Length: 161
Length: 111
Image: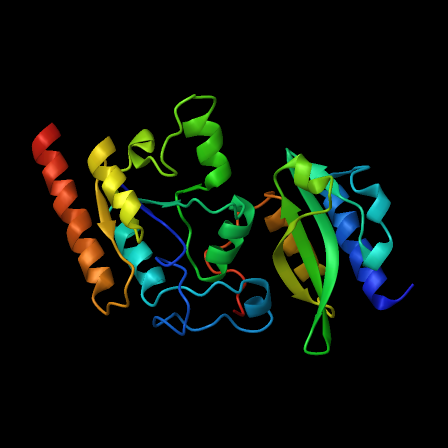
């Protein structure tokens, strides 16, 4: 099963002043979970999962998994795995002398990582993992992600049989 | 005992009912600003609490999965319930929070 991961800040979590967002959660949940989701996120995640993708969060944020699962649950989203900075530090960086990039999706066999940061995409070229950039407001962002995810899946099927 | 304290005690009783144990973590802050005992279960830590929004009091279930944060009383609020929530609602919330029962597909139902 192909894995796709998403960064959080400026990808799934956006400011409503900058980007169209999902409707705010109803009071009082909007006071507990103040991060706003980019419009289309719940439907995109559901569609990816229905299409047989494993969907992960891979973030350099220290927000805890407990909090993130509770937040996404309020939006009706359940991610297959969540990798935050703490988990990355424990599982990827560990006690290596060489400082690795903040995200190494290939360590987790993630086939496509969606991120806003240029450096992540540059690291993708250097370290051999596939990325897709989402940062600006884009009404077609979900279609683009679905298209790219399926393109890579087809590529992997051809490569590995 | 006021209604809030009674409800918080009810949550704590439910923590214990479902296998959590009271800890001595963050003892120095217990009782200050209504901060309460930290409970542990399976490597996770839980606490009952409250918050006021728009003049209304709500019950909180907080959790964290790292003892170093629990020691300092730093926890994440993972569920919020009206103060007037009945026993059944409170029990369901605790069962879900502690992992006794998986969260239903849509939770909370009224978001």
